[in-house]
Image (cartoon, rainbow, N blue to C red; front, side, top):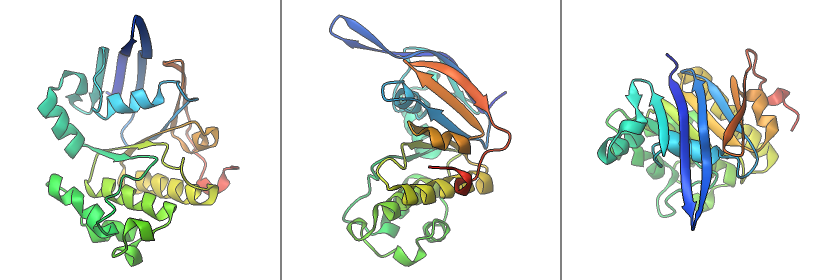
Length: 233
């Protein structure tokens, strides 16, 4: 069975007398170790899918399975453990603690995860070994995003969820962050799911899920994903 399974998943919101179908009977699968791109315009349902997969929101209907765990059947305590132990999150805006150094931001993962990796080693892996003692305000946007990726990786998650991780970066810095993410997926066999409106990023994915109006428009498998340097941005 696939590592991630969405089976007829729906998420509805009420706005007055109107029901908004943010996710409308969504079904797809993702294999372990894949770099998966969820692509679509604003309002397509991408963020809803990410929030449901990350246990940050609960589905109205349907079933979500990650590994041997049924996310849609979890109670509040189980969801907290799932988010804490199984999932790493990387957001468009870095969500770093401004009064902590880069290393101290990464070390936060050790406080919540018993199987956390060595923070200093992770900082070296993301190319920031020389910036450990700097505060976020002393780092560029790309460096701050790499700190947020290091913090997520330090948890040693089986699943890494990325919400428009290059959206606040210039194109060159964005390419560097994407190269880091694809390398981590390949080297650590971490399942990476990235949501984006940037169609160029789709060329990097083993699997591309295109969303439109809260539904899956198509799922494309790519046996030979492009390398970052091969993509025309």
